Length: 108
Image 1: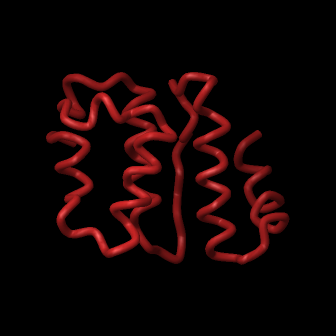
Image 2: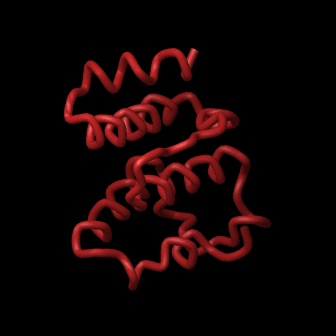
């Protein structure tokens, strides 16, 4: 995945609501100081996982697959990442409890 975070997001092609979401996610995941660094060479494994969740969160899809989204992520950000994953599920189901029950078997 060569390129910077900003290049991968292709900020200029986002829909109207997405630049705000992108900015919020970058801040929530603590990546605001590294958006211009090369993903392959300069980011830790945990930072790469955060970038993957952000890229997924910015895309509309019927199904999302996360492969160990918390691997190598600092413990302070794990809850934030899971909250955003649950938000994706909530956005699709419009019911937070349902999203939580559906996600629990995959997070244990």
